[in-house]
Image (cartoon, rainbow, N blue to C red; front, side, top):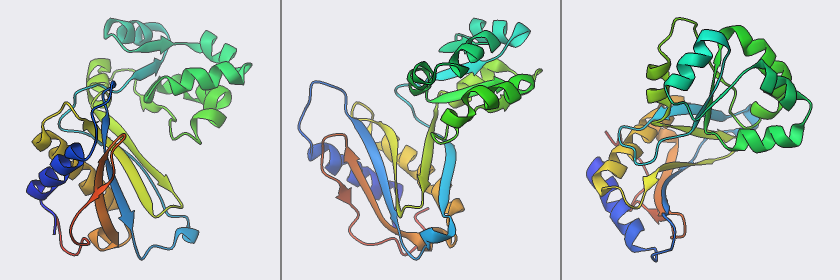
Amino acid sequence: MITESQLVDLVKEAKAATKERKFKQSVELIVTFKDIDVKKGFAINEVVQLPKTSSPATVCIIATGDMSQKAKAANADSVIGTEELDKFGTNKRESRKFINKYDFFLADTKIMPTVGKTLGQLLGPRGKMPTPVPFDASIEAFLERFRSCIKVRTRASLSISAKIGDVTMEDADLAINAHAVLNAIEKKLPNGEKNMKKILVKTTMGKPIKQAQEVKKKYA
């Protein structure tokens, strides 16, 4: 059984186990699974909203007209329209460079078919297909949500890694984020927490710190 208090201890130990670097190191949560047949197409592809954030995710909005203007006014990290999509459709190298700049993509529902035709083959495998935004939706609300989100994704693998923050954050806040990710993962496992084998925490350059025992009981 792992609690938020125990997650705090894992975070503290992970921080202590890494040397100070010239860059801000991330803190990662790693979960390994058991009793899952990966040959049956096991996959997790979830967007998880973190309760505590220190550096917002980058969001690109694909829209035209009124929605494009609203996205710019809301200070989206990037706003592109159909012209840019057409250009990317003929230059895969530039498309890849552009896609790699952003954590999430949002798109006006009416131009989703165009997005699929021009960038779908690149966005899909990276788990970055845009979230559709209805014409009357609040762009500000969408941006606020996704800026505090992370993508938790694995395919045909018995482990998953997710960035829950960085070393400058409070230990308790990192533990709260780890707990949110664990809850999201549990819901997608065939047998919930019973499929969780180990929970580990590490910094970018540090060694993984694992819990003392395997997950056997509910952690919340």
